[in-house]
Image (cartoon, rainbow, N blue to C red):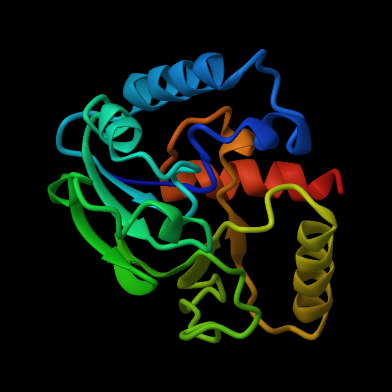
Length: 196
């Protein structure tokens, strides 16, 4: 199964306050996120992390977490991942691949995977015979900030013009730190955006 998540920020003390994550410290946050990941991800599952996996420069800290996460990991590199990716000693064998951008199939759907929300993405206009969209733009980076509200406004305006626009923010806090399938993200995203 393909699963998606973004902006975990393991070891990022600042994210606890900025994202209003309900943890006392990074140790508690890291352990909770590991537990949530492993409760969801099975051995053969592939998790697409849409950037900003770690906030540390210490290879031992990165490897400690990587060795505890179930499944296969594909990383879409985020703006903070350069802090640790190039450090000697990181177990890069833990990743199936690391890219800055990717396009692939998930069942009958085209997936555009990027750390950054892309307003005009490849295959955006492809639809099925019934008019339903065939492409989803999966992203991270903006967490739950004012920028995310602007992304929502853009989608609403675009859809009013009868242009398909399916962008899903896979911010880890939205899914209670669990990697989710495309179908689960579609359902969660629709509920979340309806309340904005």
